[in-house]
Amino acid sequence: MDFTLLCRTMSLYISSLNSGSNGNCYYIGNDNEAVLIDAGISCRDTERRMMRLGLQLNKVCAIFITHEHTDHTRGTEVLSRKYNIPVFITEKTYRNSRLNIDSELVNHFSSNSPEQIGSLTVYPFPKHHDASEPHSFTVSGNGITIGIMTDIGSSCEHVVYHLSQCNAVFLEANYDEKMLEEGRYPVFLKKRIRGNDGHLSNDQALELFITHRSPQLQMLILSHLSEHNNHPKLVEDLFSGHANGTRIVIASRYEESEVFCISHPDKE
Image (cartoon, rainbow, N blue to C red; front, top):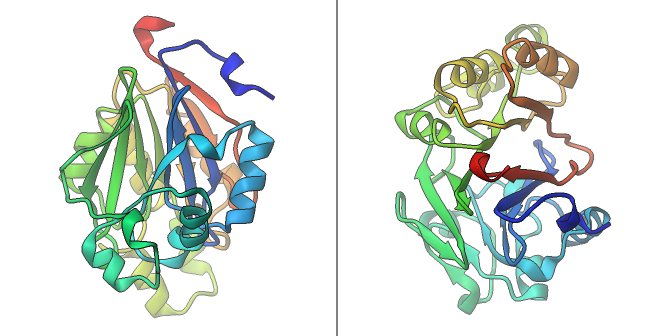
């Protein structure tokens, strides 16, 4: 499969390679270069999933790490070393992780300071989550902006602003409030998930989507769904009623998504 034949130039290609507490990895690229946001599945799984999609690892020019939890970092060391891929990570996140990356491949980024990866611009911004220095990102190129906004305890002004700029976004919808309340998790864990530094509920994500989405938002990829406190059909039904022309996709915790082509509205 040659995914470059699926859509025209002046586009970005995006895919969720995996999304959930068992591993997170998101691909964003153009015809010439790409980045991974997080590398939370093994190198072997990353290779297999990208191969099935027709994506080439030799186009991946950087890995950006959102925070140090292992479901976001598990495959980073091997991928970086095997393919000589630079890793962009904050100093605090690197210190608090168990990563041991070749020093020449470690790059520290700062909040609100964009990084240029070929013709792609990666913009990191802070978020609320129970990690040392957590960040979300937008990736821009060809006049298109993709947001990657998961593991968010609450919707701060940074999330609101960047969501409003996106043509497509991976947005967390982690849990259904009723399922979490009635589920088997202990009280302390329920509080952590609901807390300001935990995760976004379906209702919180829906409010963000309805209130702050860009008129140019083509696709909403709902991500990081809880295995025990949510269900893909529930999320799809909830958001589809408010889509108003935005395509709704549910990212899987078990398999890669298809490769989606996001084109500039003026170039379609």
